[in-house]
Image 1: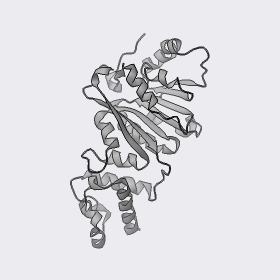
Image 2: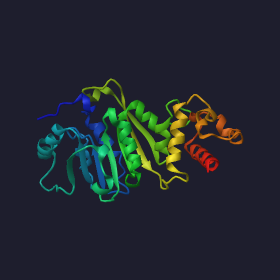
Image 3: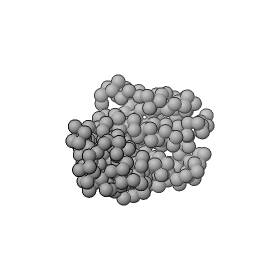
Image 4: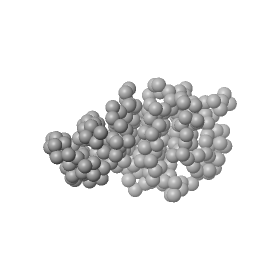
Length: 267
């Protein structure tokens, strides 16, 4: 039995064992005992995750993939001594997952060859649940991976970069060619690793921070005094040098400082 890749689910199955092993090895295993793999397909990455000591849960929306994992994959790759406590197969939608209930408030790392069509949503879901996610690793469309890890001054630096790096240290690990997938996508892929910061709380109102970042980059060619004018900034505040900058020039910490300035003004 094999699983047919489904276009509407954004599936491209990795067939390179070496790359699968490198993705599995990108997890440090520090600070957690559980790993959640999103979109396991036919388990090319899963079998390498199972070589480690942590409990591995795989989650997929594709019923055909789930059936394959329950039968062919388990028979081929799991020995009789592997208990259900170490490996769990779940048919479900990661974007609807309740972390608190599902993982019983425990820390869990996230890994996967993520479907391109929902990869940004997967990142935002992880950010929402960052209190439970110390590490996040895996493969994205190269452009998205570069955007997540981009630093200020880079043309790909934007909303996803700032919001992710406010809570995680981001590393772009390596590029993956289209030829190692079945079917091959039209673009290259990139593997990144996110490691949660020791202090991942913001010293400003989180909702306001998200709003400032999104509003600034929605008009990224404008100086901040123009893109953020809906905050009704006073003339004196707009004279602050930071408001003469464009969003791609600001570091994550400067966005936090900017949010604090606006909060003090609004307050």
